[in-house]
Structure formats: structure tokens, C-alpha cells
Image (cartoon, rainbow, N blue to C red; front, side, top):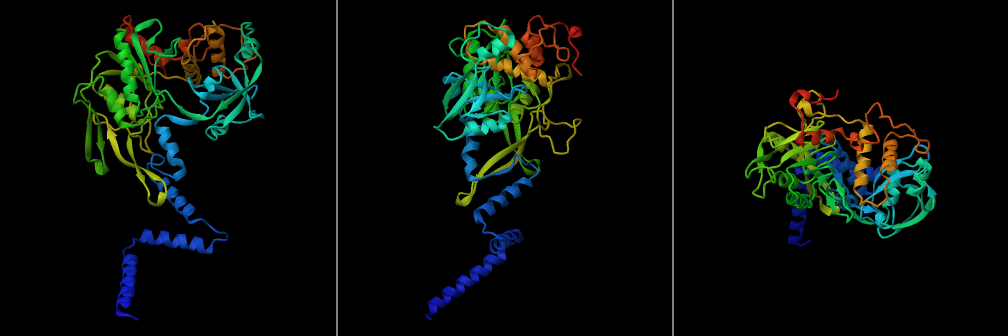
Length: 480
């Protein structure tokens, strides 16, 4: 054997020994486990599936799971779309099963394929591609409607006219009882910034009915589009002479930190601290501050609830700590951590890893630890006088009323029967044997004449911003 070949063999062997010696114990254990499973398993196994399972198991043991998680290759695009407010489907928003008929209540998203195909708020799906949906959950229906992009789905839809006729004897309802509708699946973009209601031209109106001096902007998610859309809404309100503003962050799961700091920058002076980012050991990595964009000195109320998380908690905490806004609602979710995405080699997907935490300008922590109690400090909470609870019925009714306002008026005067329909849907009543009584619903004090009674948090915000706000002694005590 030539001497240079002998040297090459020795070098390869020595390198292998060196590499083996420098593998950590966990590395060697993992490699040995994979080899054993591949060699001894009763059936053939796929090495890639083994690695994916191991990564998923590893991340699930993180103390910050599910914020820290493994994203396999087939979930990468879906996750990217989700954080940008985009999803594949026909454009169905909120869904709920009618307990009496088994049919599915739904809200079509304005401008989506469902809306363009003629589906309207208050209608119900009875079948999909000829198969009855009775017994299926909204989650199962969502999976069916998602499907392959570009491929249509055939829906059997009970019309609003038929429902109103059967529900309350409304003779204005017309048209066939159930119709067939073909709807294509497309990429649907959610409105991440919305107003109080849509006008006849489909554009958002950002002032409250009956209170034109009070602006209302709802932020559903912090994406790349949130700040420019929010600033556009502020500009519209400025032209209309608004003097105060309600920022609705209820149900907002968060999103990009830049969106939160950008929103705060419209109300805080340049250089004011928005949030402090801390790494391992509590070391301050970064102080995020307000930039120099146009400022609005309006009186502010921020609505939050137990589903307001992450970036929405940053906004609420910063505006409250700088005494720039009054918080109304309930204590927020308590997610005070930052996640980063790391791409894995060999096309194995990504790891979403919790790499930092954030604190309010006051220094208080937002994150709720796994063993935290209600008495511990976490999240962002309104002051006691503005702690306003909302029960399941009120939340459902308020959501449905907001859904109804998200569509341009159709010209038909159906306000009373539609309100009855919404209130009964929220209470899960038998919609075709309605209670004829106009009496308020005792447990919630909601009534048909004043739909806004379904949203006591919004009502409290309006009272704070209205010129006729009563003296301190006359204010309502917080609900128990």
C-alpha cells in the first residue's frame, strides 16, 4: 500500500476517534437511540420522522411550551401566514353550532370568497359538498372548509329570509329556504385594524354612533400592516375633529414588537420607554422607546381582557405606566416573553424559541409563570373602579353585534329582529320558539332596545370619555 494512502487512512481513523470523544453525552445517547430504533424496531421506521418526533418532544419539555415549539417543514408556511393575519379557506370567521337544528351559524369575512359568493351574516350552513354537518364541531367544519387552494366547496345554506320568517314572523324575509352556493378556496387576509362599523361604501367608520367626538379603533393582531393602518385611522379621526379615542385590544393575541412600539409612538413623547427586553439572568438587552412620529393628545381608553396577550399587553402597560390611557376591562393574559425563529439544517423546519422576556416601563413583569396564582403580580390590569367583568353571554352577544356592524348596511330595516336573533343565539335559546317577552335578561341586564348593554366594558369606556361623566361619588361600583 502506498505510504500516502496509509497516512490518509490513519488520519480518517484519528478524526473519527476525535469526533466521537468530543460528542457530548446527550449527542451520543441520541445517536445510539436512533440506531437502536432503526435496527431493532418490528417495522421499518423513517429516520426523519424519528428526528422530528425527538425535536417535538424536546421542545415540549421547555418551561415556556407552547410558546417555544418545533415547527416541522409542512407547518412553516402556515405559521408565517398566521402571524401575518392570512389563512387559506373561503373566508368564514366566527362559527357556532345551533343546538336545536345542528346547523352552523357563521360570519362571512367582508370581501372574502364567501362574501363575494353571496353568503351573509345570520345565515346557516346545513351541508358541505352534500354531506350534512349535523354533529360536527366548528373545528371539524373549519378543517373541511380549509382544503386545497383553488378548489371550490359546495355549501347548502339556509337563507336569512327563511330564518327570519320562521323565527319571528318577519314577512320581509324572502327567497328560497335553502340554496346551493359554490365558493372557491383562496388566501384570505383578515382586517387587523377595524373601526366601529362599515358605511354604505364598505369603508370603516371610526367614530361611535351618537358620540362623534369619540373615536374607536379595534386592533386584532400586530402584523406588518398594523401600524400603517392604525395611523391611517388616526388621520381620518383627526380630520373629523375627534377629541378622544377607545383602543380595543380585547382578544388580541399579540404579534410583532415593532407594531406595539409603533402604536405607542402615536401617543408618547419621543424617547419615552415602551418596554424593556431582558435576556437570561435578567440582563437588559434593549430598551424600546417611542419614536418621533406625529403625536395625538386625545384622551385615551384602552380595552383589555383575559385574551389580550404579548404585544397588546406591551401597549396597554406602556400607555398606563406613562399615565397616558385609562385601562378598562379585566386583567390581561400574562405572556411576557419574546420568541425568535431558528431555521434547522437539512430542511428539517424551524424552532420557535423563547429567548427573552419583557417588562413594563414601571419595571413590573408581565409574564405569568406556570405556578403563579391570581394574587401574584402578572399581566396588565385596570384600576379597581374600571375592572369590568363580562360573562359568556355578553361576550358572545357583543361579538355577534360587532360582526353585524362589520358589513355595509343592506338597506333593510331589520334591526329589531336581527338583535333578537343575536341575543337568543348568544343565550343558546331555541331560535324558532322565541320568548316573546321584551323584559331584560335578568342575569346580564341585556335588552333588545339597547344592544350596547351586551358590552359593559365598552359602555364604561364611553362613560369615561363622555363630557357628562358623573362625579366620583356617583360612579358605579365594580362588579363582583
